[in-house]
Each structure stands twice: as structure tokens, then as C-alpha cells.
Length: 233
Image (tube, rainbow, N blue to C red; front, side, top):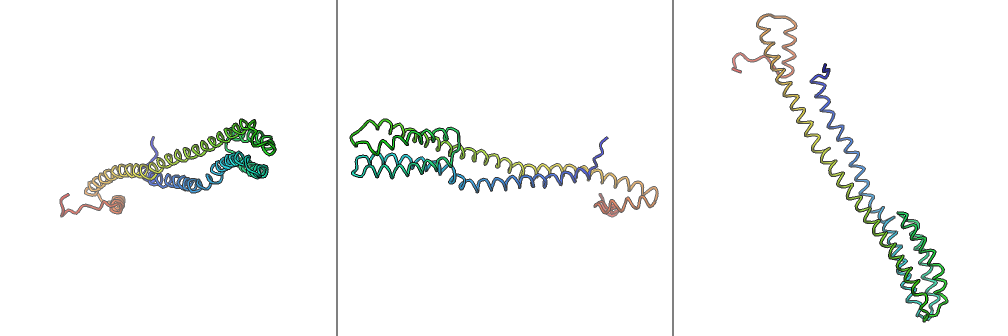
């Protein structure tokens, strides 16, 4: 047995749309917060890591150039300090295990190489392969940083598509679906009330009672007044 009255159904459909819109509003607000904070997060993490790797690369090229200068030892030492500083920055912005392992490898390989560069003769080419290997590792780290940036961008793009779908469903589809259901239910209610008015008129022609008068008043309040006999229906 169906215990849901037409009024209950109408109330349910009338409350459904605002409830869904309320949930959608919370999701949309969360999405605005996410996308609003995304540039700052990128600058604080992925972009900072990428700049640190670029700083390492620059320091290595300056070391290679500085070996041929009169104050080669001081140049190498200054660039070593800069390189170590960039290593620490990169460690503070690690986004994956691959990045962490590569950063530690670079740090471990760089220390003995820098010590050798400070004392090596400018004409000594024996350190060039190690320097090139270190530059290659830094280039690999830069590639990982770029991949991390692309991953964040891809995640943001995916979330934006999801939010677009939620917005379309919650703000367009659901209200119109609820409207169509309410229209359908109210149409059925209209037909039933009109039929009740017809039966009430038939009863009032046969007998007069307080119940029929009450029914007549209720139908009048609902927008179904007694038909005017002077007007053809």
C-alpha cells in the first residue's frame, strides 16, 4: 500500500532541488578554493623544486667555466655553496620517491667532485666525465620536476572537468527534472481536484449538509470555486 500522498510527493520534490543545490554549492566552493590556492601551491612546491634544479645546473656550468679563470678555486667554492643551497631547497620540495633518490645521488656525487675541482689543474680533463654525469643527473631531475608540474596541471584539469559536470547536473539538470516532476504531480492533482469538484456539485444538488459545505469551501480555497451557472463551462 502506497502511504505517500500527493502533498508528500510535492514537498519531497520541492525540497530535493535545494538540498542538491546546497551540496553542489559546498563542492563548488571547495573547487574555487582549490583553484584559487593552486598558483600559490605550484609556486611553493613544484615551481620551487624546478628552480632549484635550474640553479644546480647553472652552478655546474659556472664551475666548469671558472676552472679556467685565475681565481678558479674561489669560483668553484662559491658555486659549491650555491649548489648545496639549491640541494637543500630541492629536498624541502620533494614530490616523489624518484625525485628524493635522484637528489640524494646528486648530493653524494657532487661533494667529492667539487673537492677535486678546487685543486685540479685547468688542463686536467679527468674530471670532465664525472662533471658531465652530474650535469646529466641534474637534467634528469629537471625532467622529473617538469613531470610533477604536468601531473599537477593534469589533476587540476581533471578536477575542473568534474566540477563542470557537477555544476551542469546540479544547477541545470536537477532543478529542471524536479520542475518537470512537480508539474506532472500538480497536473494529476489538478485533474483529481477538478473531478472532486464535479462530484461535490452533484452531491450538493441532491442534499445539503455541513460536510458538503465544508468540502465546497475547501475546494474554493484550493482554487476550484463553484461554477458560475451564468457561464458555460
